[in-house]
Image 1 (tube, rainbow, N blue to C red):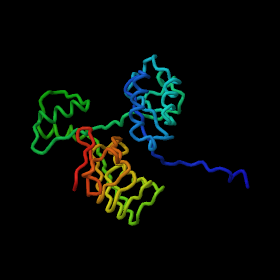
Image 2 (image 1 turned 135 degrees about the vertical axis):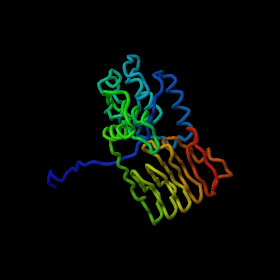
Image 3 (image 1 turned 90 degrees about the horizontal axis):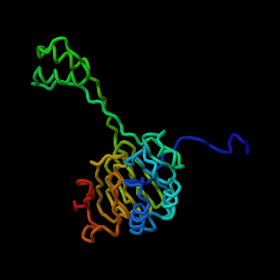
Image 4 (image 1 turned 60 degrees about the vertical axis):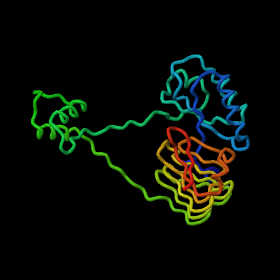
Length: 266
């Protein structure tokens, strides 16, 4: 075989669990991991994770990076990368993992004058956008023109849902990026369906369903028969063992209610 064909290097899209740390206390981390993993040992066994350090003090010098990674690996989790917004921080240097950007997306809201708004409101919008005036008094037309001159257009692109018209079998994984996922059949045990937005299953859901994987907490999972191994909304998950018996095998919806996963019959 030619050396040119021995390997292929290209981009890929993979879904990893995120291990978000809210403390640098290794004893507390160890105890919390033991509690989580003991809920579903088979599910977490040998699972790759991204270590999210975003909530820790980037300037702190108390975290022992090697001890942290050893603690995580003791629970059969495998750290593959660290998420941190400041790559040059001392905290990043102490964790010997590849770094990925964990910075929040910035959103610039355009200055605007609402229909029926006043000149004072337009003046305030324009000032917040960084504009200065020679005179503090302007007519409503002048204020509107000034505010619109400093605005930015925001383009919204709505993607069609990913429609799957066949069953999803064990071992298969589907990911609907930036859109909804619709499955017109069952999701078998051992299968995994993932979406940035909502998930609709028009059949039994026996595998794993994870919606809002990019952080959208307003997403939901809908299914005709709830028998899932795991359901997750924006990283908040429930295992089959923790789903009430009264809800199993029934049409259901799953969503986040004040950061708590809620499940109700349809």
